[in-house]
Amino acid sequence: MADIRTALVIGATGNIGRIAVQLLRERGVAVRAMARDAGGQPDGVEAFSADVLDGAALRAAVDGVDAVLLIWPFMDAGGIAPVAAALGAGGRRVVYISAMSAEHGGVWGEVEAAIRSTAAAWTFLRASGFATNTLQWAAAIRAGEPVRIPYPGAARSLVHERDLAEAAVVAMTEPGHAGRTHVLSGPGTVTQAEQVRLIGAAAGVRAVAEELDRATARAGMLAWATPEFADAALDYWASLVDTPEPVADGVQEVTGHPARSFAQWAADHAADFRAPASVAEVAARYVEAFRAGRFDRALALYDPAAVRVAPLEGGGELRGLPEILANGRRRAGDLDAGAVGVQGPYIGADGFAVRFTLGATTKMSLLTVEGGAITREEVHYFDPPA
Image 1 (cartoon, helix red, strand yellow):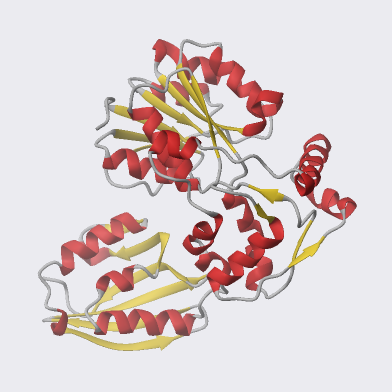
Image 2 (cartoon, rainbow, N blue to C red):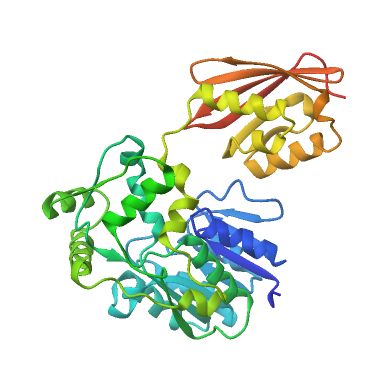
């Protein structure tokens, strides 16, 4: 049971943050979500669309909050001092997702130092590598190409984003973590080549690793990283060939359950590594779901940020899967599945159409498909809805 009332998640739309938002709500905590674009939050979550370096927006978001989760979005610590001061004011809990290497300085160590200098009741979660970083291989795997990486023999103890989110929520909502540093990792080490193999096995696709020489890898990294960061990262990966990344028990210590394995992460993300379904495949699944009375399966085909436009339903535009799901439950709650007539699908280049008959109401839904998911639905009525 949470011993706080209100929490702020900074980085709420990222892999860790969006899970933390969900878990905090399940604990009965009022949640505020902050990100550059914080739209599409679940019902009841107060969204703040702003950069964390926007002082006025940050002060508004943190006002009256009992605990904060900070996921620092930058490659350097520039601007952290006023951010840390705002977060730590009044001695509130501040949980920061840091890194194993923070003890040696770098951006993570600088952020930790800034938070320590405030009155915050801080907790640092020093993580090993994020398993989600392997999503950068998805394009190659989906295309059936080898994953070209430096040091495929580097062994890492990658941590699942759900373990990080669960640990963060515990530290935010339960006593006993103030002033403590927890080190979190996966339950064992897995080489990069084995990570590629496990992803392929989970997704049911061919996936192989191919070694990339250091100079080529460095040149590619300079598109998004400083030379110093690129060199440090490559040196670190090289060291992991002979000295695997440490394995820590922080997940068990904080959450009470063992850390999830990389194989589990690969299974959870298998769909990310498969080629997206075609328009025809999405259309067939959508119609099949409605004909079977499985509205949940149909809604599962929507992108999380999908838009639904139906002017005659009184609500106009719905943005985000949570709102679309809620609308679907309201409208289908008393509906006899056998009473729904479905004609189609009528397939086009970038979408499809389906004609529905629901009692005395007939409508045509025009659905846009991008990347194997429905991103937009336009509903047009032949007969007004009851």
